[in-house]
Amino acid sequence: MSGSGKVVCVTGASGYIASWLVKLLLQRGYTVRGTVRDLADPKRTEHLRALEGANERLQLFKANLLEEGSFDSVVEGCEGVFHTASPCYVNATDPQAELIDPAVKGALNVFGSCIKTPSVKRVVVTSSMAAVLHNGRPQTPDVVIDATWFSSVEFCEQEKKWYPLSKTLAEEAAWKFSKDNSIDMVTIHPGVVIGPLLQPTLNESSAMLLNLLNGSSTYPNLRFPWVNVKDVAMAHILAFEVPSASGRYFLVERVAHYSEIVKILREQYPALKLPEKCVDDKPFLPIYQVSKEKEKSLGIDYVPIVTSIKETVESLKEKGFVSFSKLAIAK
Ligand SMILES: NC(=O)c1ccc[n+]([C@@H]2O[C@H](COP(=O)([O-])OP(=O)(O)OC[C@H]3O[C@@H](n4cnc5c(N)ncnc54)[C@H](OP(=O)(O)O)[C@@H]3O)[C@@H](O)[C@H]2O)c1
Picture 1 (cartoon, protein in one colour):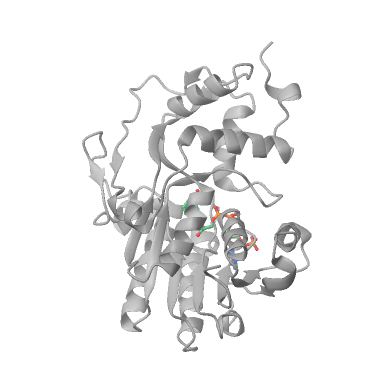
Picture 2: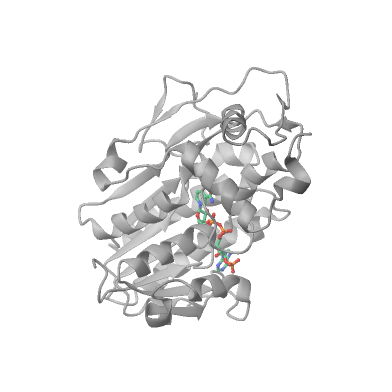
């Protein structure tokens, strides 16, 4: 197994993406040190402790992004650090305190711990397509978005896009710190992540699909870049394991409008009551392309969107977030 004998750290281990990352790392033989904010909360820890290999090779630690030095003892002795912890939701009442501080100060805090120990060979940071797309440039079917694209701080501020702003500022700060301190860093930029949930709680991106299943009569006039959580987790691991991996990796299987997501749901679940129309009468926001060349070189082979959608629905059902019989079967 490729991770045998290697110790790595995953920050925010209980999260949606991180739980899959921990699972796959354990499967590959790694010893994993995962951080959570509240070790006493079974909703944050039980699903991790139940993973195969966890008894032998998973250690959980308490750490908070906003407490300086919180990650020092966790990172010490680790060969790789996967920094995934960061608030992932869009409706913040105090964006600076809720989103921006934990994202930016948190990243610098984790990096600060990394430079205190010589053991760390590479840091893989979970950034986002939110740190790529928000710059006001046209996004139409002929446009191919590649690693030269960055979100603009000014544009995010102007448009009050606080989550994208948090990810943009965090990425900027991380690149500056890693260059100034000669840290080998790779950033992973997933689109909207869907697929099975391991954790018992509902995360923001899974809720985007759940919202279509809860009897709503309309869908938003929005398009997003979608990707499966298992591909995202594996990309983090490959970004650590492949020696030549470097720079930014965009993870997008397909850009699709909500109308297309609803169409797929209707084909897969014909008995479901799904939104019939778009929330407005404007033309659908156009899709765009995202370059896949670099990601293919890492060895990513994407799960198709239809499978990802089915996996999400089945998982939401299994976890009790949606009950087809009560809520959504068409009469
Ligand atoms: N889901 C997506 O569509 C998507 C797309 C692109 C990028 N991302 C990025 O992927 C990462 C994980 O997101 P996710 O979707 O897995 O969301 P999630 O399930 O909400 O996980 C977020 C994680 O961040 C941790 N966290 C938040 N504030 C913290 C703090 N102050 N100190 C320590 N930990 C803190 C949370 O810890 P607690 O468990 O203690 O709350 C949780 O483990 C984030 O960096 C996010 O920006 C997500």
